[in-house]
Structure formats: structure tokens, C-alpha cells
Length: 63
Image (cartoon, rainbow, N blue to C red; front, side):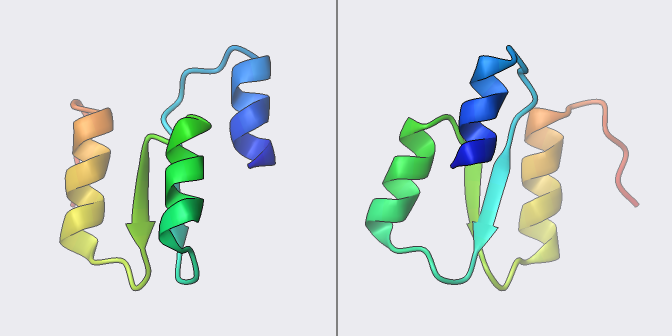
């Protein structure tokens, strides 16, 4: 949460993707309300991660 709050304090617009293996629904809702761009539950599937990175960074070339 502190990272999300600092992001807005400093005027940074880099999307923040949160990942966790222990977040419940209320935690995820709070993350989105505080500015998270996305939430990926663990274990992270490589294809989904690449898809989300390309969504936020369209010019990104992932190998």
C-alpha cells in the first residue's frame, strides 16, 4: 500500500502490478481503489504476465 501511496504523491504514472499468494477479495479491492493497475495471484502464469505487461507497455518486446 505504501508503494501505491508514494506513486501518487510523487506524480508517477508507471502502472503497478501487485502479486500475492495470500490476498483475499477485500485486499484486492483495496489495492485497486488505491491505484494498482492489476493484481496477479500466485502462482503467476507466464502468458498472463506477458499479456498484462504488453497491455500496459504496448511497445514492449517480450521473448
